[in-house]
Every structure is written in C-alpha cells, then in structure tokens.
Image (cartoon, rainbow, N blue to C red; front, side, top):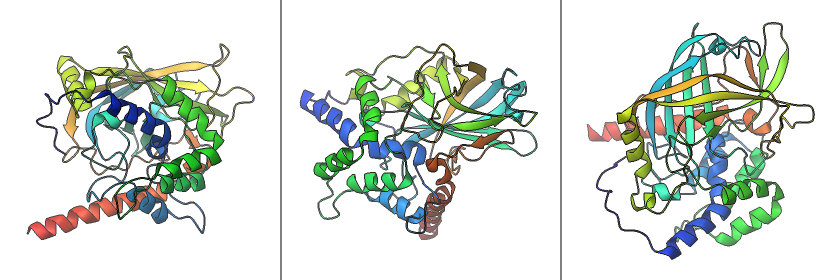
Length: 359
C-alpha cells in the first residue's frame, strides 16, 4: 500500500460530503459488519465460509494479496501491562499482573487497499497478545459498539445488497434500502453512526469487542462480559481539514508515535441480570450498578507498513482465546474461524503466485 504524495489534496466539494454521509448510513453497514465478521466461518450446510468470502469480494474490485475486508491498514506493536485486577474474574494468564507482547493492526472497513480514509466511518483495532505456555488472545474490535446484523445469514444478505454490478462496477442503492427495510435491527447501528462522528485519528477512538464473552474464574464460575479499549487521548471528531489527505489516519498516527507511546485502558463491562448475551445488535444499557473493571493498559509504541510488517499474515480471529475466556452463544462468533482460514489461504496463495510470476 502506498501512503505517499497526499499532503496537499484539495478540499472536496460539499456535495461530496453529503454523498459520503448518505453512504455511511445506507451502505457502510455491510462493511461494518465485516469489521468484526470479516471472514465468517462455519454457518450451515447451505451457507459456508467460501460463500461469505466470495460475497465480500463482490463488494469491490479484485485486490490480490490483500484482506477481503479492512484491506487498508497498518501494523502496530507494543505491549499489554496487566494490573492484576482481572484475576478475580478470570483465571486467564493475561489477567495475572505482568507485561505481555502485542502485535496489532489499525484499519478502516472495505476491500480496497487504496481507499480514501474519509470513507472510513469507523476505526478498527485488532490485537494478538502473546501469553505464557504458548497461549494467545486475539481481539477484533471496532469503534461502533453494535453490529447491524444478528446472524450470518443476515450478513450475507447485507453483502449481497452492497455488491457491485459486474458490468458497471456500481452498487444499486435500492438493494441496500430494501435490506434495511427488511432488517429493523440495523437501526441501532444506523443511529450510532449518525450521532457519533468518527474520531479524528486512530489514537483517540474507543474500540469495542461488541459481542459478549465469558470469563471463567479459578473456581469455575462463569460471568458474561463485553470489553472496550478506551484511549487516554481525548476524543476529537474528524473535521473537514482532516479529509483533505486520503491517508490522514496513517500520517497522524505516525506523527503521534514520534512524540511517544499511545495508551488505552482495557475495560471489562460485566453483564447484569436481563442483559442479552447472544445478540450483537443490542447494546447493554448504561447503569451505575454495572461493574466496570480496568484490567490493564495497552501500550502501542511503533507502527509498520502492512506490506511487510508483523501483522501481515495474522488472522485476527477473536475466538482464539486463552484458558479462562470463552465465547458466548452469539451466532456470529460461532461462524467465524473457518472463513478466517479461507480468506488467509486466498491471500497467501495470491502472494505465492505473484512471487512465482516474478521469478
């Protein structure tokens, strides 16, 4: 991915911004669901991993060697400083006090690695935390706390509504409107996007795990949680000056890191009676009675290009969990791992073919 020659791009006309806002409301949900579902795995005898990955591919022109969603991104490295506060909730080694290496990736939704950053109405953060005894914890998060769809079948419908016509290369807005009319559960996601402008950078966004997971303590007691990663840097909404640069997210992150490491706090939100634990379209209500536990600090101190950086060949499958953390019954979580493998296999095969042709 090239990040050059972009600092003096002229401001876009106001009509362009209106079109972008409309697209965010009507079409971005397909890419947003992909943020956490970017490669849905086992689904049903009729709906398999390859069919879902094919549907992602149909939303953009071919880009061999790149991820089918979140194609534009950057690698980051650092560590997680666990403060030990999570140990009462989970026996997972990540919650024992200590420091654990992290490789991550920051990105925007979409299958085009040359996408303008202004098109990204959310920010995404994926992490691989390396733990003792060959364990890993992989997290895939985004800056919206809900998904627009509840099931893998609905995701496929969404992607089909967002597909480009192979003859014209254009989307049909009527198909997306019909999808939204048929899926009222997508309204919560639409409201969030409308009411929460994207952050001005990767470094001042809060990232949500969205789906519920289970923590298991030393006595085998299970509790449901949802986590979020909250920045120390204050949130600022994106503004017109940012949008002049199609790669402003990359450049601003690099600029911030030159001043020093960036920090987020990993917060566990514990379920209360009545909270839904198997539906990612429903956000838990804010309550003064809800335990919110700060379990440690994520520190990012360097960034690398995704072409040859350490995140390139990692599938950030959020069902890769250490002992002491387990998935919920959310049908989207149960569907993911197989298609992560399909997507990664395709990328690696395309890269191998390109190297063979070069020689």
